[in-house]
Length: 369
Ligand code: NDP
Image 1 (cartoon, rainbow, N blue to C red):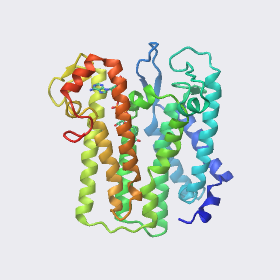
Image 2 (cartoon, helix red, strand yellow):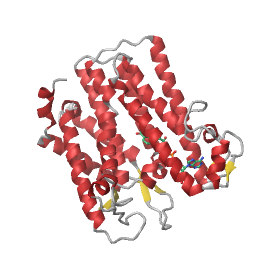
Image 3 (cartoon, rainbow, N blue to C red):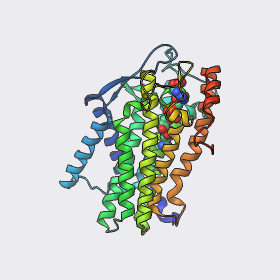
Image 4 (spheres, rainbow, N blue to C red):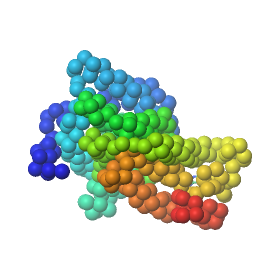
């Protein structure tokens, strides 16, 4: 890559700022006015519960429809993201820095004592800015953490669609690109169909909103998870039929495990008596599910997610490590996260957790890890 050529495109232009502004304003308005199931978040330590309106699927469908119509009328170019990728990336980075500085300043001065807004100040500026000060800060009654993760997941699909339009326009559309696009689109749509599950994930319940999370949601997810798509724009791959079948199998099995495990935990938390795979659930200490996927390994959901990540890269073949950035990163992240989650659960559940460890000794992949 010639850095001399690409460096100037890293400077955000006014157009890239307008694109971002339009996107955030649309998401804020759509999130507030579109109908959607209102979900209560997990019980916070002070006994309060936040409410989340899960209308992401409708907001996304409407946005894609609006952009599609605007593209047809020539008002917007479908290539706007693919052509301005680096500019949008740097504009998003600047936004992440500014918004997290604002979160740091407002968080520090907050006198609110609730679990979601209470300031956690260590006194180390970099630490507090990086990890955040408040658990669930809001802006104009919008839950920012839920908002940013939604923006990141939708942004990933929009980037992919623009890459797809570019590959159609320059005549490079390949089977690899089609497979990559289908797998990612199904994963992202599935995320929004099950958006309510997000409300009980680690990021929402345990992580404070600082630069790490904002950067992860707004920049890391859309711009690095789409590396395979960018790579396929410039590299031709001839897939054999067995390679196509293998990629599809990894995707389908990964999806079944990922969605099945997350669904079982979600259902169990709502009603611990619901049968798992047709049998009464095995429950440890009345709190932890030890059957179904949660009886095979303590984080089968991570295993499914890792298989899905691999399936997004397999259509790129094995000629380059670049398209394997996402599964490699996810492997490191999920092993790290699983370790932190274990510590948290050991503290929270004490002897119940020890009993669960005895019943289910595998962390992510049975007989391996
Ligand atoms: P989990 O959904 O696995 O949630 C972990 C929590 O679940 C624990 O802290 C505990 O919380 C509860 N729990 C753990 N074991 C049990 C059990 N046996 N029975 C009942 N409850 C249990 O983790 P994450 O929030 O990290 O991940 C959610 C999904 O998001 C995963 O599928 C993951 O792969 C995906 N993800 C994807 C990322 C990406 O970049 N693509 C990044 C991070 C996550 P409690 O205290 O409530 O009981």
